[in-house]
Amino acid sequence: MKLNKQQRRRIAAQQADKLAEGDASQSATVVCHLGYQLILEQYGALLTADWRKHSGDIACNDRVLIHRTDDSHAVVEAILPRHNALAKWQGRKAKTIAANLDQLLITIAAEPDWQENLIDRHLIAAHYAGIPAAILHNKTDLLDDAATAALEARLAPYQALDIPVYRASLQENGVPAALRDWLRDKQTILCGQSGVGKSSLIRSLKPDADIWIQAISEATGHGRHTTTNLRRYPLDDATALIDTPGVRGFALEHLDRAQILAACPDIREHASHCRFHDCDHQTAPDCAVLAALERGDIAPARYHNLLQLLANP
Ligand SMILES: Nc1nc2c(ncn2[C@@H]2O[C@H](COP(=O)(O)OP(=O)(O)OP(=O)(O)O)[C@@H](O)[C@H]2O)c(=O)[nH]1
Ligand SMILES: [Zn+2]
Image 1 (spheres, rainbow, N blue to C red):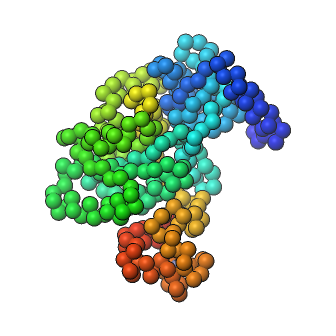
Image 2 (image 1 turned 90 degrees about the horizontal axis):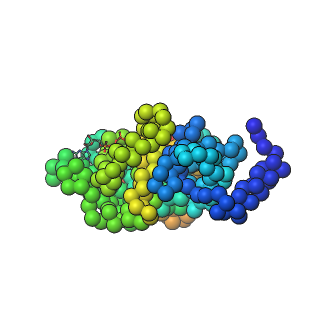
Image 3 (image 1 turned 45 degrees about the vertical axis):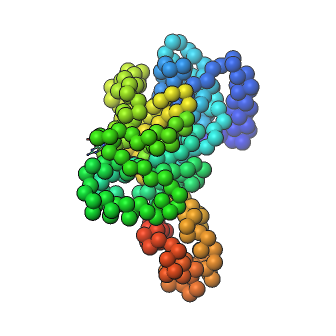
């Protein structure tokens, strides 16, 4: 059902009243959005919750005001204001998948094989969510010296962008101290292909992760259905990890060329000096991007990856 302006205004006003009432209701954090049901955490305990039709697009890690209906169930009255939100786009339609994030961690590994394109899409999504990103290169134990050098060379252009790159063998050595520090007191969304080691990272940092997963399954009453939904893992009062099973990457079709370029800090400056506003950065005359590439001011890999993204957002 589509709402008219007046109905939307009335709902917004009702939600504002609820927010103002504050402690008449109580707040909780969204652990998991199952589509038909929400799993919330309040004071360490899990609740199932329904929401009113027009509360808005509730996402994992949202803070919500609730009305408890019994010990294990609640109704969401309103979404508390968000710092930010990460959306996944399908064509021109956006779906918020997580809110109130501080940073994004992309994990890659020797296996499964990965493409720069995957990292680039995550960096652009992070850029538009207004959060910094870092890369975790896991399973270093699988690489010999030559393979390590080759992989490091692929990651060098990202390090040149001041994106932290952490290296780990989670299985053999656990979580490196520098990565622990980076994650501390932050709400971090964990991205990466299936099998790179996201669960291993969560289990290393949250020894009771399996108990938490079990508790979520019990709350839903639907066994293991939650495995393809985003899930929040609290580590302490200020730290949480948000796992993203089933999020295969970020389509960028909703962005135009300029917006994609704007999210590439190493290239956008040069692009602003191209002779033509709509320069293709390939064959057009007086292309400042090509000139910078020839001077060595843009990493060839970054240039080629950008062309690929522009051709296939
Ligand atoms: N060799 C090696 N294997 C690892 C390492 N870390 C994790 N693995 C293995 O890689 C496989 C996938 O790890 P997970 O942690 O389940 O990966 P994931 O990203 O959570 O994958 P999904 O659960 O499918 O999303 C498991 O068999 C792990 O034991 C590592 O440092 N070295
Ligand atoms: Zn150009």
